[in-house]
Length: 247
Image (cartoon, rainbow, N blue to C red; front, side, top):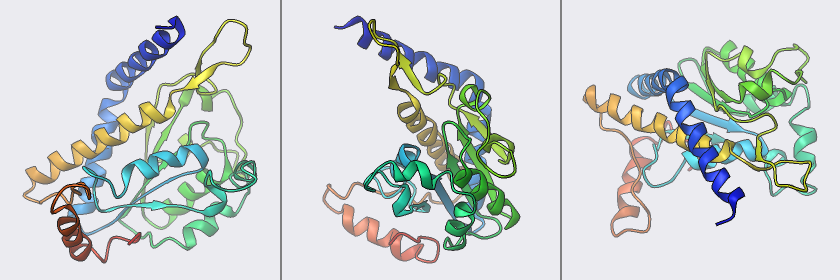
């Protein structure tokens, strides 16, 4: 195996170990916030712009996932936008996060999870600020090493980690890319998606555990590719139709 590939595997392992050691309490708190919202009849939303939005895709409508997690997608912030560089311009636009949130049925008591690696762009910062004004709780997943080396692009001057109720550090490298191959000046191989997926699925595990402790049946999807999966998932859509906004 290439030594660089081996380094990458080892590095991702090191980061996930660091996340566990330093962020497990906040992951636990995040699962508590999710579980409480579900138990009380509220909803959960998740947002990320561009590649950060991959975690929103990871969390909703998939086997082993919670049916009550609602992604917030905007076409100009998705990677199928052309030219794709438009996503970078739109996530920096002051006022845009507020407009997106206005079209989202989020309310007091709901929970919004926002993922942004740099934590500097206006759309995520503004969405967090506006959600908290509505009385929703905001959980932030970001890279604190990265965030503390760049400046805010939002008019408030604040970074995303400044405006969350709870912050989870993905413990990644500055700029996210992690491996320097000899002959290159630019590192390759980001870690935020793989490590982020571990973080958010850990939150889901904690939510399921807490709901069971409280006598609440967790609304978890089966795979649509097993016999009976479609039928089971249909019952979840019907039962929680007032709190599922992607169906």
